[in-house]
Amino acid sequence: MKVSLSPSFSPIKAEGTVTLGAPLLDPEGARVILGSDGGMLADPITPAAHRMFGPRGVCLHPDGSFWVADTGHHRVLGWHRVPVEDDTPADILLGQPAFGREGRNARGPVTGATLNVPTGITAFRGGLAVADPWNHRVLIWRRLPSGPSDAADIILGQASPDGSLANRGADAPTASTLHWPYGVAAIGGRLVVCDTGNRRVLVWDDPKDNGQPADQVIGQDGFACRDENAGGPVSARSMRWPHMAVGWRGGLAVVDAGNNRVMIWSSFPQANGQPADALVGQAGMTDCDLNRGAYYPSSLAVNMPYALGVLGDRLIVGDTANSRMLGFSEIGFAAAADRLTGQPDFASKGDNRWGLASRDSLCWPYGLSVRGSTVAVADSGNNRVLIWEAAT
Image (cartoon, rainbow, N blue to C red):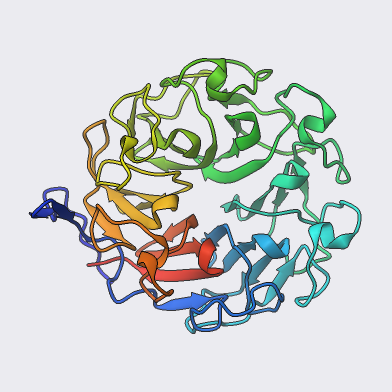
């Protein structure tokens, strides 16, 4: 499918006081729905190879496989190839001994093969990295795992595979510890981790060993602070709840859900605590109100965004609490989204548009992955994953 992303295209038009946007993704809806028996909310509590409970992470892997962090079932599901039919059962299971099992750390001790509320997931150097937030760690497989007996090769945030305490039991963080890390991303060969509970983003240039310290911190001036907004007011250098990062236009974008914005660096930050150069979602660097202080959203505003992706040259924002996805061609305080999926117009919100789930509706999208013209969405509130094609 050919995707037209010409920056000269201006799809927004006014109709009374309502602003419409051209579709971001195919308006016919997702071509494949996984996890909820045809799109309805069918018994998500009972685990199965084709069923999910609040999935929050997705990964379209470069090798053609597909991976989902099935968060509520404390497991990761894998498909050898991206599914082409609804509710295709997974081929690979991580974190549980069998597809019919669930429970934190497989209802046993913490090991290098168990999971506790997995969230972010990304391809990393041919393998896989998974955020395991309630074990306060990130798991890295150098090669793609094939089953539940495959333990992670590298564990970041803990000194050993059986460690599970926030900041390793200390009050203050260090360069080696994590507290509820939500998102992971591979950017320019680095591993970037949104260490949400410590209100910071950590960067590893070359992770090789268990417990290895990060090389860089963003969102705090140093590794020892975990205060909201670096202990001060909202600013260009501070964060509240960073959840996902992507590389965009040679720089870095981080979604800061707690401050209702996306922070953007024009090139990859080089110094600890380096301030962002621009943002979307707020009118200024010191603003943080959801929907810019309004009840209804707009093409300029967001409400607790959790997810990011890049489609062509466009930044995709999973505007989670508004149950929609936005596409931005430009950045800056006055930059408005020019593409929209999940709602009929930029002024609308509501889970599934205040109706039942359908192929083109969303309920709290928490995770995104993009490869070519295909966009995978962790549609967490609907207990499903959508595999969607970009609009032409």
